[in-house]
Image (tube, rainbow, N blue to C red; front, side, top):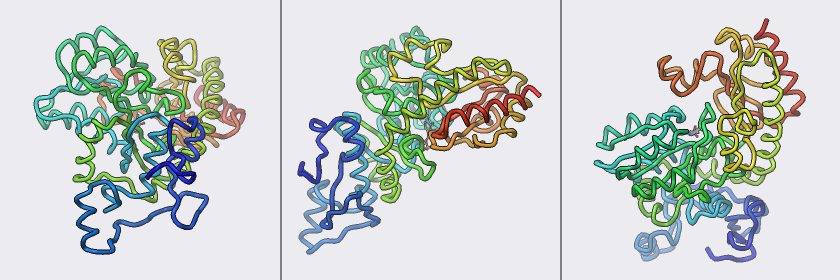
Length: 402
Ligand SMILES: *Cc1c(COP(=O)(O)O)cnc(C)c1O
């Protein structure tokens, strides 16, 4: 669809924040203000000839919502415009996006390189699933450029990384790794969930593909699952057929919810990141806290690199409470406002004891390797008044020390 007053989606004419509100909008004949929800699985044709033409002229009109849907297309155009990518492919969940981007680019005999410190399901795709199909995998210490250099001294096809990593906040030098990856012939796929599209632009640092769990900050209000792959036309040509024929497509309803989420994304993420910094400082000064990992604090081992790559430290704070699992559980059970949950990026503040939930299936050795100890808590800062959150944490920490 061309650019018209009702479709002001050209990235060249809109600043990023305006993109989040207007990008990709396609109005139906009713001139509705809000984006229309096209809750339809299929589309009809005025004649047999029209149906025939629709299947020949692939892509020019909507045929079936597993392939494309108008509401999903609005979300895709809005997100692509915001991040300056040619293409966005929406998926049913964040993991569907990771799987599509990684497995869609790989074939038997290829090699994928990634850090150990990855979200559990991402690690499963790289370390367990890919090798089943004859794909070699090399895992490195993500913060050690020497290990990246060695791993990428031989040809590779895909480099996959998260920065900061979930939940241990390891920061990868994206530009340096992208440079090494490109010399090795690999495309770089960055899972940008923790940093969010507001605070970090992996594309500007050389990433070829960016993936999101839209479930997190893009929805940001805990309602639905979704994912997105941002890429150029060449990558889209490789992975679009995989989506079309294997079916991890986003529901139009979820796309509609996520479109509304995008409208407030910058406001929410900036407010949550400001509270996160204040609360990270509070936690760091508290005697019941062993360590705080927050990229926005000077105490973070890669603070300078993080601040070069990100506009702020993010909305998540990982900290270790003194006294291990028992103290961590006392803390969680004393909280009134901050909810115990394994989700993140929500308007509601959420806290997770990773060792017993998200990373339960790892051995103690593996947990130690990715930096998760019995006292580790991942705190996703929401939109509540930061003073209420501080008081809630203070009560929890008093119970932990109890
Ligand atoms: C949550 C998450 C995912 C997976 O997203 P889903 O929408 O839950 O499938 C992938 N990567 C990171 C870093 C995440 O936090």
